[in-house]
Image (cartoon, rainbow, N blue to C red):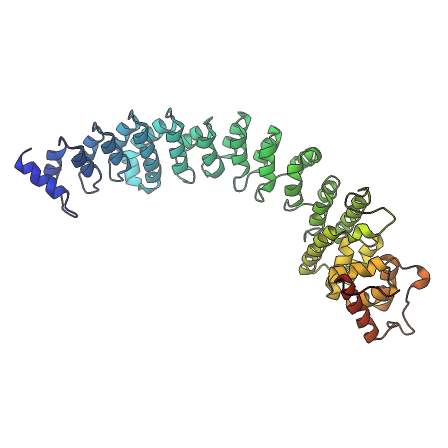
Length: 442
């Protein structure tokens, strides 16, 4: 090597040292690949130098050009045909990222070549190269439609799924075409997860019959599902337990669907249905009755016999009902009128929890009042919850199941037939009973 080239190599290694076109050209055929690699990584060289290095025999040099953001577009076209997959992989990631950075003038001059590069990479024989391009283009609003559609139609899920889920370039017609091509579950599920899936696309997904994709669609709160499509889902849902919970949480669920869904889901999910703030009181009461009926049919597997009230006192049911009561209270729906309407169904978990919420009492304390069928206890609960004395008599009959001759009726003038001290004593006693600190007096 000549002394002149030695000086150039030394200068090349100096940080911040400017290299002229002539100096860089003199090093293009340097026998040490590390020298050429150093050149390929620079961002201050003339495009011609980088273009020349795109044909370098050393893979590391070509990979450096592939990731060099200042490399000319024509160099990318060479590298898109490179025999080494790592070179093409690096290029796919970089080219996908520079698409949105081109201004109109640059696009006019270079777009044809860039499009050629993208087309080659989108059809590359290796999935990892196509996948790198898909990841780079998936969220770009100005990515070429034909390239994105090619990736969306790719049979390799790792390639197609990113653009199917995220690309804003794909139209509803594109997505339906993909669905009708009978892709694998991963692709269908990716479409189901898109933001604002349209009604026609949702209908096509449901028509595919793919359980996982339909599950993902139901979980997607932004997906638009028209009534007829939801009808088809609900019709098949009793046999698909994975759909039950997402159906219960679907937005804008009307009363008709809520009651149909309640026919086949578990009682805990019916409780969640009833806790929705967008369901009317009449439907909530109907759902409460369905919970009670399910517990009574349980034949000892979670509730007790039909003649007993202990189905309503099931610990798990009460916990769920307490959360539901909190939700109703937060929505302003838990009122004395609501409780009285629901009391017609007897001591359901929701009515017990609702009374406890209104009276500011532990749920278990009110449950003990019901368990004991205590007229005085229910009178005290009603008083603490701001019911009238007349309403308290109804609660004794319907919730505590007090016999008619034992009901404590209002005194003359309509007040409670007990002193505040007596009522407070009853509440304290049932709190202690619930905590295991006392027993109900015989």
